[in-house]
Image (cartoon, rainbow over the protein chains, first blue to last red):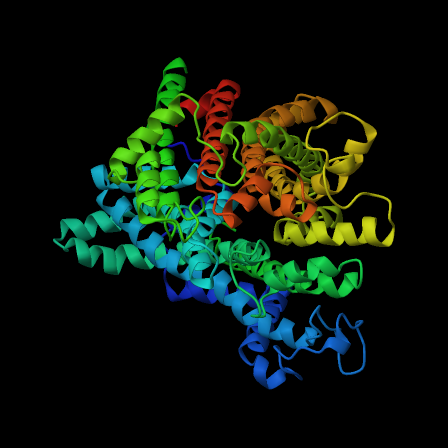
Length: 302
Length: 317
C-alpha cells in the first residue's frame, strides 16, 4: 500500500509499454514509421530542435549584446528601429535576451530530468529487481516525497538552499526522482516476472547479467518516454523558480527571471513584458506534444 | 473495506513522521546560521551563545528535532522571526485565503474539464474531440504564472475592468462574500484553473472512451435504454477516477498556488512562503511547509477512502 496517488495515465502508459517484450528490429521500424507519419510530432520535433539550436548558437544569431543596457531605449516598443522585439526595463535588446535566455531555461529545465532519470532509474531498478525489504525502504522514502505537491517541494528546497542555478537544479531533481523511481519500479517488477527472465535465471545467468541484458533493455524505453513527458513541467517549474527570484540571478538572461523583472513594467509596455512567457509556453508545449507523439508511437497496443 | 480504511489511516503516521523529518532537515540544511535573522552581525559573542541556548540550537540535531516535534504535536509552530507573531496566527489568516483560491480553481477546472473531456470522449476522433484535446494540452503546457500576467495585461491594464492585485479593497486580508472580493477572485481563479482543466479533460476523455468500449454499455444499448439513461451509467463509472484526480488537484493547488499568489499579491500561504524565504524567517518557512504538506497527506487519505467507498475494487489494491 502507498499513500501516493495511483499511477496517472502517463505513468500507466509507461508500465503498459513494457508489458510486451518487443525489442526486435521490426518494433523500432514500426515506431519510426509511425513518427514519420505523425505530422504534429514531426513539427514539434522540428520546433524543439529550432529552440535548442537557437539557444546554443545564440551568440551567432543574436544582433546585440544581451547585457548591454541603454537608458534611452528602455522599454522600447516591439518593432522599434534596431529592436525587433523591443527592449527590456534596462534598454537591453529583447530578441537577443530571449535567444540567450533559452540557454539557461533549457539547461535548468532539462538537466534535472536527466539527473533524476539516472538516479531515479537506478533506484527504481534496484527496488523492482530486489523487491522485499530494499523495495520497501526505497519506496517508502519516495512516499514521503510524494506527500508534497511538486511546486511546494521545489519552492521549499530551493527556498531553504537559497537562490542560484545549482540550488534550483538540485531542488527540481529531488522533485522528479520520486515519480521516475516509481515508474521504473513498476516497470521492472512487471518485466522481472516475464517468462524469459525466469528462463535466463533458470539457465544460471547472474543477477547483473539479467539486469544488463534482459531487464534494462525493456525498462529503459518506457521510462525514457515517461521522463521526456516531465521535461515540459520541469521547464515551467525551473522558470517559475526564477520568476520567484529563486533560480537565476540578475543580470543573467533567463525567461522566468525576465518575466519577473519586466513584471514591474506591465503598465508601460505590457506586450514586451509578456514575451518571455511566450517562449516558455512554446517550448513547454512543443516538448509536451513531442513526448505525447513518442508515447503513442511506442504504444504497442495500438 | 473497514480493514482497508484502518490500514490506510494508520499509514498516515509513518508518512506524517517522514514529512516532519524532511521539513526539519530542509530548514536545517539551509546555509548560514539560523540565528542570523535575529542577531545583528556585530552582537557580542556572549549574547549569541545565550540566544543559541535559548533557541536550543546548541543541542545536537536529533535532540532539536524531537523537541520541535513535541511542540508541533501540541500545535506550537513557534514565533515568526520577521513578524514577531505566532506562526499559527499567520497561518490562520493565510490558509483560508489560499483555500478559497484553490477551491475556486479546482471547481472551475473540474467543471470545464468534465464538460470538455466528456464531449471529447463521446465524439472520439471528430473535430470537436481534437479541439477539446488541444485545449487540454494547452492547459497543461502553459506556464500559469505567465497566463496570470497576460490576464492582468488584458483585463486590468488594457481594458481596466478587473483589479490586478490583492484580495479585496484596501489590501484586505480577510475574505468576505461581497462583490468587490469576488471581482478580485476572478483572474487568479481562472489562472489556477487551467492546469486542473487540462488534466481533468484528459482523465475524463480517457475514462469515458474506455467505458464506452466495455461490454456493459453495449448491453445497455441492446437492452433498449435511451442515450440519456446510458449516460447515467457512464457518469457513475467515470466518477471515482475523476473525483480522485480532482481531490489531488485541490491539494496541488493548495500547495502550489505560490506562483499565482505572487503574480496577484494574494495574501495567502504562497505570500507567507515568499516572505519567509526572502526574510530568512525559518520558523515561518518550516511551519508553512509543514502545514501545507500535512493538508496534502490528509487530502490524499480522504480521496483514497472516498474512492474505496464509491468503488469497492479499490480497497483490494
